[in-house]
Length: 392
Image (cartoon, rainbow, N blue to C red; front, side):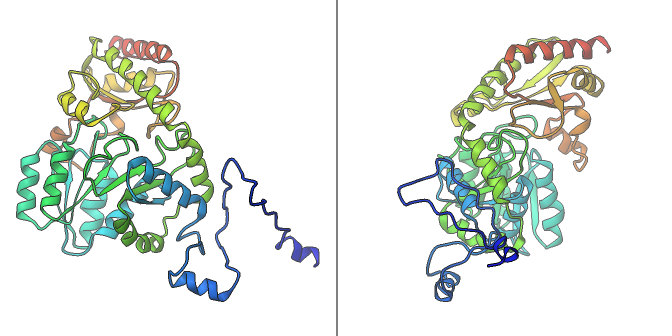
């Protein structure tokens, strides 16, 4: 064999059957083959297991799917190249012309866009309510044959808490699917509720390092299987190396989440006691309007702390700019702390009444608490609050 051929057919290295890699390898290959055409045809007919083309499935991404499904307490999962990707592919796979969707004002902006703009172009209608309006949900379900109810809890950015039991009960009784974006709460929470599909941005707590993107939809086996062909055809495939990085991040998921929640509680308490702060949004605080519901539903209250500064947008901007340990950027769940200023998250697609429902004010700031020493973070927050108030 000449070298020009050899570089495309390198020697095969196989582990002995009793010799195992402690860390699973990255299957960084688009294509897989079987030993014969007969076996290939069996696979294509669904008569045997295996892998053929990474856009459809890959051993590394499959390991990630099985792991997060198990963490969430469900049978199966599909992963995609980003969190927004899994939202869009799920909505496209589940809906058709003439379907109706119930969604909420207090929802991730891209989710609202997908429902109100993209699905609307294909003849899917929607009703958008407040996450607190359970009576409105019941009324909308009675008025419209509804395909799915999509919601999140805690909500972004002011951590409202959805009544998961009520929403899933109403959806189920109306023959609608319940789809929950569970990114803020994490894989270890809410699995005991009758949610049909959980959505997660793997970019956040799963990765934990802020260096890779991914998304996951998790549910019972038959429902996930019904979506698999659409997902493969839509092509938003998670790269195997990205899947490997997320698998690596998940090894420290519980340690990180617990530490970040503990620090978030202390920062929330600090903010609540400061005279420059009008209101703190953190479900772990007894002053949170849905604290009792959060306590009943959640094991941990998350790492997101939002607050309304008395000085409005100007004070919020000064506060965010004065922080030294918080990166001024989007996302959450990574090891470094982050801040989003009021100017970065006003819902420009919402009416004035919808903005009121959202509870995002001119002075709302969102903090994502990382793994820095909590005393350092609190010192940084204190000096930034002084800077914001002093210039007012």
